[in-house]
Amino acid sequence: MKKAFVKSYGCQMNAYDAARMADVLGAEGYAATDRVEEADVVVLNTCHIREKAADKVYSELGRLRVLKAARQQAGHDTRIVVAGCVAQAEGAEILARAPTVDVVVGPQSYHNLPALLASSHTKRVVDTAFPAEDKFDHLPARRTGAVSSFLTVQEGCDKFCAFCVVPYTRGAEVSRSVAAIRAEAEALVRGGTREITLIGQNVNAYHGAGPDGLIATLPALMRELATIPGLLRLRYTTSHPNDMDEDLIRAHAEITALMPYLHLPVQSGSDRVLKAMNRKHDGETYRRLIARVREARPDIALSSDFIVGFPGETDADFDDTMRFVAKIGFASAYTFKYSPRPGTPAAERDDAVPEAVKSERLAALQGLLDAQRFAYNADFVGSVVEVLVEKTGRDSGQVVGKTPHLLTVQIDGPPSLIGTLVRVRIVRTGSNTLFGEIAADAAVAA
Ligand code: 5AD
Ligand code: SF4
Image (cartoon, rainbow, N blue to C red; front, side):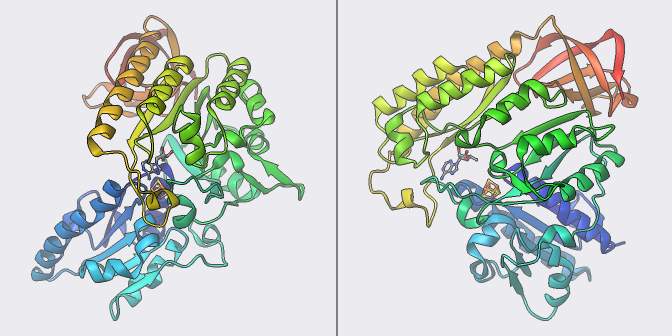
C-alpha cells in the first residue's frame, strides 16, 4: 500500500488543512504514516507567520533531499509537496530554491492534490490559485475519529494588522454555510468526536449563509451545532476584539456546550503601539470587553497573544504592556518577538528594536505570564472538574484529557474512558499538566 506523511507547522488552521490533505490522499489509497522514510508522498504544510517558522521548511527540505535520493537508490519514488502559507507566499520561488520539491500547493487548492501529484511526474507543478470553486465541496468526507477535532468555519482576514502576513497568504474573509458546517460536524461526531473547536483566522467575524437564507453569526452557528446529539463541547478560535459583540458574549452565558475559554489576542498594552499596529482597538476597550465577558461567564479562562519589540516600541510602551497584563490577569498566553514579514507595512519601518532588547522584553513578559498561569492552575488543586478524556497517557494505565478551561489533566484510568466525560479531583499541578484522580462517581456522560 502507498503511504503518505503529512507534517504541519503553525496554527490550528494549518492542522485542519493537514488533516484534510490526509483525507484527500486517503481517498486515493494512501495510508497515513508517521515514518517519513517509508512515505511515497511527503507533505510539508508550512507556516509563514514569523521568519523562524518559514525558515524551518528549507532545513526540512534539505533533509528530505537526502532521504529522497536514498529511496531512489532503493528503487522507490518519493513525491515532495510543499503546502500551506509558505507555498502561498513564495510559489515558484520554492521550486527554484529547493530542486527536490515536486509540487507547491496553496491552502485554497489542496483538493487538487491527486491531479497535481499525477502531473508532477512530467513537470514540477505550482498551484497557488484562489479558485472560484470551493475546495470544501471537493474534499472527501472526514475520516478522523479524534475525540477533539478542529473544524474550519471561516478563512482569511480583512483586518490588516501592520505586522501580519495572513491577509496576504490566506486572502479575504470567507465563511462557510451553516449547512456545510453542520454536515461536517455530524460526520465528525459519527466518527467519535465529542468536542469541536470551530476555527478561522478571524472566527468571530463569521457570517455564513444560514438555513433560513439569512446570514448567520458565530453565536447562531454555535446554537445550531449545540443541538447535535453526542457533541458534548464547543470551542472557537481565533478572535479579534472588535468582532466580540454582545450576542457572542451572551453565548458564553447561555450555550451550555460552549466551554469557558476565550483566546483573544491583544498584542500589546500600549495604546501608541496598538495604533501603530493598526489594531483598531486600545487597551481600555479591551479591558472593558473582558469585564463584560467576565460578567457573562465569571470563570472564563482568558488567553491572548503578545508581540514584543514591534518597530518603535519604547521601554515606556513595554512597561504599559507589563502593567496591562498585571491588571487583566491571563490564564495562559503566547508571546512572540516581532519578526518583519515581507510585504507587510511594518516591515518597511526603519525603527526596528534591537534583538537583545526584544529578548529581554520577551523574557520579562513571559515571566509575568508564567506566574499568572501557575497561580491560575494552582487554584484548581483540590477541586473536582469534568475532564473529556482524549487519549492514552505516556505510561500505560494513564489517560489524558482536557478540563472545560482547556487545561491538560493526566489521570490513572483505562483506555475505555477515552471519549467520555469523567469527574476528576485535581491533586497537583506540573508546569504544563495537572494531575488528578477519578472522583467517586466516575463517568458523567458518554
Ligand atoms: N511577528 C511576530 N509575531 C507575529 N504574529 C503575527 N505576525 C507576527 C509577526 N510578524 C503573532 C500574533 C498573532 C499570532 C498568531 O502570531 O501575536 O496573534
Ligand atoms: Fe501560519 Fe498564519 Fe498560515 Fe496559520 S494562517 S499557518 S499562523 S501564516
